Image: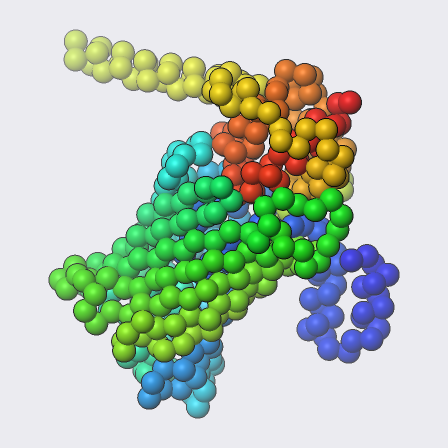
Length: 298
Length: 129
C-alpha cells in the first residue's frame, strides 16, 4: 500500500480507529509474516532477532448457565537473540450482563537450547503472570473449566493470582508441516499445588512454493491446521477427571501489508469444557524495531 | 593441590568455550555443513520464475538485515560476497537457512517450506551472475 492510497482512504473514512490502523499499516514496513495459526500452542520457531510483533488474540464463548464473554490479550513479542524471545502481555475481558475489566499482565521468555535444527526442537518457556478474572484461555491447566467462567467479575477481580508457568515446547518441521507439542506446568505462588496441562497442533501452508508475482489471496498466504489443548489436573489429582479439553480447526491469512488474521472455532470435548469457543487474532510484525530509533535508518 | 586441579579444569573449559566462539566466527559455518548437504542441488536451478519468487521472499524476510540489494548492512554480511557467491554451494546455503547461525544472529528459516528456501537461494545466487 502506498502513501497516496493511504491519503485517499483517510479522506473517505471518518472512523478514527480505522484511520489509525490504516496509517500504521501504511507506514510500517510491508512484510510477509510466516505465523503459525495457533492460539494456545507454541511452536519452536522464535521471533527473528530485532523484530517486534504486536498481536491481539481474542476468545469468545458462552459457558452453560453463564454469560457470554470475550477475553483478549495484547502481546508484544520481541526477538532478543535468534535463540531468545521475550514477550509481554496485557490481558482483559468483557462479560455480558457484568463488566469489562483489565485482568493483568504476563511476561514470558522462550529459550532455545539447541542452536541447530533437529527432528524435534526443544524450547524452554518461563512465564510470570499476575492476573485475576482472566478469560482469555491462553492455556488450560489443572482443573480449569466452566465453573471458572461463572464467577462474577466483582468476585474474581480481587483474587489476584501470581503464577509461574513453565512449558516444554517441542516442535518439528517436516516437509512443510509443523508439528508442535507443549507440556505445561503452572504454580500459583501461594500454597496451591502444581497444575499441569498440554497443547498440540499441526499445520501447513496451503502451498509450499511462492509465486513470482504479488498476490493477495494466493494459497501460500494461508496456513491451516488443527489444535487441541486441555488440563491434566494437579499434583494431588493428576489425570483427566474434572478437566476441560478443546479441539478445533484453525486457519490464518497474511495480508500483503504483513498483517496476519487468524481464526479458529474450537469445541469443548466434555461437559467440563465450554461447548464452543471462537478465537480470532490479528498480528503485525515490525522488522528491526530498534533500528527505527537510530539516526539515519532507512 | 585440589585447588590447582580445579583451576586447570576451569581453564580447560574456558579454553574450549573460546575455541567454540572462534569456530562460530563469520564463515566458519561453512566447515560445519555435512557432505550430503553440501552436495545438494537446487530443484529450481535455472528457472527465472524461481528467481522472481525468491526475490519476493528475500524482500519479505531478508532485505532488512542484508540490505535492499544484498549489499549487507552495518550489522549483517553482504550476500554478494565471494563466500556466498563462489565458496558456498547451493547446498551449503540451504543448510544455513534451515539451521541458522544463531550465535551470530542468523535465525533458522526452517519455518519456510523447502521450495521457498530453494527459491530464495535461486535469487541470492542470481545476484552473482
